[in-house]
Length: 361
Image 1 (cartoon, one colour):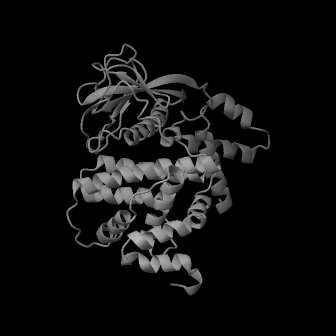
Image 2 (cartoon, one colour; image 1 turned 90 degrees about the vertical axis):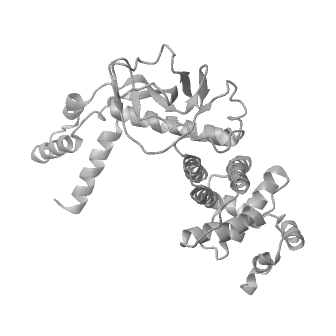
């Protein structure tokens, strides 16, 4: 078989599995290969026969996924996902199904509406939606810094007959969720879909995943690295030489444009240049004060919301255009003047380059 034929076969298999009517096929590659062989031997249209013999009508079903270390006292909705108390009568009983366990540390159950023909694949899609909702919730629950490690459990169930599980290795701490989620879900990040529609959202979801990793690790340096990875996903530029300064300046400009104020950018510059870069390059790094790491957590969450807010305000769909806006905004001169007055000498070379790029400083 020629290379282009192999490529076409793989593409056909992918298309079949992507169609909900055929996702139940355990051996889709064999089925498609058999179809290709029949088509090669007989020029008649074999598509209707293939569809007729292999398709199933997709069903709608609620997938119930245990959530560990997060307790709710009544039904809450987060981005279309229902968080139910473990004693909710809609949840399938757990005793006959060891894979679907509702004992502690499970504190609630996420109910996700799904559609398809294979319960395993439907459960995977449901877990993607539930995980996205929990990421957004973690970012929104700013009043609980340091304990936002609730997570989806290993099991799932659709009714009193169908259940399964998949292992994972993260850690978590318990949290009881307030009945009022209006503040937690009021920021721009709460409008972020689980699947990106453009480049702005693609980078925002990447940053959200890095922030999520920071919440779920118990190591402060590792958490700081993840938060800077999130910041770089939003505001970073691989072509920059003085990367720490560029990130800090864009964070400063972004906050200025969306809130009218900003944190002192030297904090971001110092932590990125001295801690993040040192850790990445295998150097010893000083022990981090919890107040410093907590401040970075808050600032990066603010950046994510401000990034989405500015993109929506200016109708931007590409991150490159948003970065260009930050780099070339008319207020740049005022911020440079502020930095010359209030920042240290470590900013001099970078600010010279901003003001006189033709000199190549």
